[in-house]
Each structure stands twice: as C-alpha cells, then as structure tokens.
Image (cartoon, rainbow, N blue to C red; front, side, top):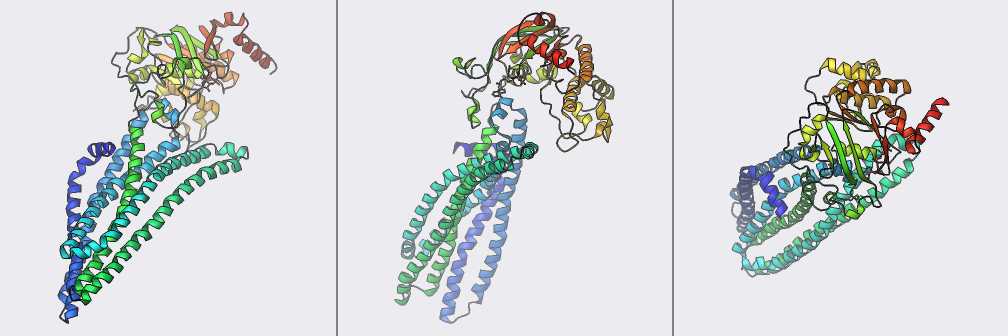
Amino acid sequence: MRRLLRFWREYARRYRRYYLLGVIALIATNVLTVAIPSFVQHAVDALAEGSDAMGWVWALAITGLGVMGVRTLSRTLFFNPGRTVEFRVKVGMFEHLLELPKLFYDRLTVGDIISRGTNDANAMRALIGYGTLQLFNVALTLTLTLGRMIQLDWALTLICLPPLILAALIMRHAVLSMFGLFGQAQAQLSRLSARILESYHGVGVVQAYGAEAGVLARFDEENDQLYALSERLLWIRAWLLPVVGGVGQACVVLLLYFGGARVIAGELSVGLLTAFIVYIQILVPGLTSLGFLIGAAQRGYIGLGRIYEVLDAPLERPEAEAAAPQGGGAPRLEVEDLHFSYPARAAGVKSAHPEGSPQRDTSDALPAQDRGGEGFGLKGLRFKAEGQVLGIFGLTGAGKSTLLDLLARVYDPPPNTVRLNGVDVRALPLNDYWRAVAYVPQSAFLFSQSARANIALGADEIDEARLAAAIEDAALEDLEGLSEGLDTIIGERGVTLSGGQRQRAALARAYYRDFDLLLLDDVMSAVDTHTERRLIEALYRRAKGQTVVLVSHRISALAEADHIIVLHEGAQIDEGSHAALISREGPYREAWRLQRLSQALG
Ligand code: ATP
C-alpha cells in the first residue's frame, strides 16, 4: 500500500484534476446506466396495460447515447494520464540507469532491465489507467445498482444476495491464487528476455559451434515455464468468467421463481421484475470487471515494485565535495593496502547491496573472512606512480582489470586505499574524477555512430586538429579508408571493426580528451609488432608530464615502463624495472623468455 501511496505522490497526483473530471464522468455514466432498467420497467408496464410506450423508448435511446458519450469521456480522462506517467517513469528509469554503478549491472541481466522498462511499465500503465477507471466504475456500479434495487424492492434484492456473495467468495479465491502466479510470470518473462538477448548477441558463436539445438533447448525450457504459468493464469480466468456468469443466471432463476410468484399474486408488476433482471445484467459484468480490475492491479503492483527496485537502486557514491587537488604537474597516484573482493552474485536487485548500505563500500560489504578467502580478491596492493608509466603485469585472472576498474572508480575502492595527489579518491566528486582520468578498458565498446563521434565521445564540437593527433597516435589511419572515412557509421548497426581497430579506436578516444591519469588495459593485445612499436612510442611521448598505468600481458609493451608491478592471484608478488624483473626467477621472466622464443621462431 505504501508503494501505491508513494507512486500517487510522485507521479499521479499532478493529474488529480483529470481523475476528478473522470470520476464525475463516471458518476454520470453510472447514474444514466442505473436509470435504464427503470425506463424498461415503465415501458413493459405501459405495454402490459396496452398504453403507448414510445416515450420510454425514446428516453431509453437518448440515455443510451448519453452513456456512450460520458463513458468515452471518462476513459479518455483516465487513460491519458496513464500514458504520460508511463513516459515519465520510463525516462526516469533510463536516466537513473545511466548513472548506476557497474555493480548494479553485474547483478541484473540486460534482458531483465529491458523487461522492467517494457512489460512492467505496461502493467503499471494499466494499473493507473484501466485499473483506476475500473476501481471507480465497479464501486459506483455496485453501490448505485444495489442501492437502486434495495430502494425498489428490498425483499427481491435479498433473494439475489446469496449467489452474489458466493460469486464474491469465488472471486477472492481466484484473485489470491492469481497474485503469486502474476509475480512468477513477470520474473519468468524477464529471464526469457535475458535468454533471447544473450542468444542474439552470441548468434555467431552459436552457429559456428553448431549449438543451435542446445540454445533452443534452453529457450524451450524457459519458454515452457512461462507457458505453464500463463496457462495456469488463463485456466483460472477461464473458469472464473463462466462461474461468475452462471451465478448471474442463478439470480435470474431465483428472481423468476420468487418474483414470478409475486407477479401472479398481483403483488409485483411485470415491469419491476423485468427491471430487476436488467439490474442483474448490469451487476454481473460489474463483478467480472472487479476480477479484471484485481488482475490488472496485481500485475501493476508487482510491476511497480520491480520498477522501484531499479529507481531505488542507490547510486552508492558518497556525495563528495572536495575539489580535485591541484598538484601542479603530474598527478601522484598512491595505492595503499588495497583489498577488494567481488560481492557474491545474487538474483535480485536488492541483494546487490548486501547490507542495504546507501553508500557503496565494497570492502565493508563483505564479511572479513571473505577478503582474500576462497573467492577472488585483491590482497593488500601497495604502489605509487607520479609522472611516469607504471606497468602492471600478471597472468590471466591475476586481477589486472579489477585493479584498473578500481583506479577508474568503475567500482569504488575501500576508503583511503587509492589517493590522487594525497586525497582519497572517494572524497573527490565522481564527475570531476572521471574528467581527470582517461580509461581504456580491455574490451572496447563502440556506439553505433560515426567513427568520428565515437572518438570524440561526449564532445559538443569536434576539434579536428585534436582528432587528427589522436588518430595519428593511436595508429588509426586505416579507419580513414572506410567507405565514408571517419563519417562511416561503425558499431552494432554499422561497419564492424576488427579487434585491433576497436582497441585503437578506444585508445584514440582516450587521447582525444584532456586527462591527468591514463589507465590502459591491455590495449595492444590485438595489434601486430610494427603497430605495437608505433603505439608505444606515441604513448611515451604523450605520457610526459602525465601518470600512466599500463596493463599488459606483452613484455614488449612493458619493457620501457618506469616501474612494473607483478600480480599473481590478486597479490603483488614482485616489482621493479624490466631489467630487474628479468634478472630473477618469476612469472615475468618466464613470460619474457617465452615471448622472446616465439618471436625468434617467427
Ligand atoms: P585477463 O588478463 O585474463 O584479462 P585479469 O588479470 O585482468 O585477467 P580480472 O579480469 O581482474 O583478471 O579478473 C580477476 C578475477 O576476478 C577472475 O577470477 C574473475 O573471474 C574475477 N572477476 C572479474 N570480474 C568479476 C565480477 N564482475 N564479478 C565477480 N568476479 C569477477
């Protein structure tokens, strides 16, 4: 209930005038509808007496037209705010999603997020449009019709009550069964969407490995579960409508039996009995609408909960106010006693924040024994870099990308473990920090826009000289040879670039920006040795007066670094210059030997 009140306050209340006018239109609809059986009554009685019934027929026709008009008006007034609210909620979700930290995305699949923004948003719209309309409509229909029936003949009304109460009890049972099923069906739809998206993304791999049958089997499995849930829901609705309809017919039978006897005894007019039968025809659809209303309300309520899970997911960044420290020269990066573990994977959004803390402190979020325990963890890293190129070497899975994600604040490091010019990075406003840092992650992401816009990402106006310098230093001239040069659309809906081109485009993107700290994660892994040489020379030229952290598997890329850290299973096991590291046994020297050997073999 609190969720609904909050939703009303935040989104729907501003449309209260629409709802008020809608309710007035609904009252008019129901008052006119309730008048119709009375006209039928008078028309039948007039016919029974052999007098002219045309006046009542005209009254019926005009009232019918009036009902049409006000009903349409009420629907417009209730449905329009629904669309606007849906728009606002979807925009709000998108804006919030753009700001959420990566930890959030580690826990929800893209399919699930899309499902919340589409299926759940539709359910929410149905709740505030159709649901609210039906809420007032059903309440008015039931009270006005029953009120009028009691006013006309309370004894005859009493006869109809037992079947109507029975119908209400059946409805309650059905509604309770449906509630759980709706929740399961919506969650299952999310899983299915995620599965489908994953298959589309990996379609090339699926085909290359002939894995279609396996993918189809997994799709079928999820689909069958959704089908089974939908079938159970449909089954409940399928028996609910005829049962409620049957109850209505039972009322008619009782009315004919008891009312008919009173007509024969001359205590009741035929017209009044006919009017009662018409009232039942109004009441029963009202009860059925109640069923649909409760269904829509349940789906909407669950959908709203799932939408609020996204909207309420904390940004988890402390509101830092410290200004970026002015070092006057190359920034000083200090890492001290840096421990980090990934929180255990969980199914829902809520569990992404194990202790419900509004601020993310990934180290505190984990039990102490987990640090450096069974799962992967960075274990007490400690190093400095100032105006130099710091190399990070490690075998696969050593924790290099995790370290860079922490330095770039993709994940916030624990307090006071990473400092820039002596200030804990957590104390720096995130946007300022990100402006000062250029980060090229291991897998480059390109948007489906021109190569030019990809490189100058986020810039209002493109500085051509700067763009040309970035392209030159990232050895990206081959993009100029594309059909429309740098204006060629690349990425998902455009030309697909090679792995090496993607890496270099991401590197050019970093070079295009102003930065103090450059973080490069294995950006030369997909280039030939000649291009690697060019890239290294340009990097060292650009690195003058900057601080660069360069992660690489390739010793050739690290050999000129001022200082190199060797990581192994999250721990810093060695450090020194290239010359020092190749002079002693260890993974660095081993890799250097193997890479020299493979170079010599051609
Ligand atoms: P590579 O050279 O292969 O890129 P790396 O040294 O960069 O490896 P990381 O990507 O930092 O290694 O991964 C270190 C460990 O952390 C791995 O065991 C990996 O499974 C784990 N890991 C990485 N990302 C996550 C995540 N989002 N959630 C949980 N565990 C993760």
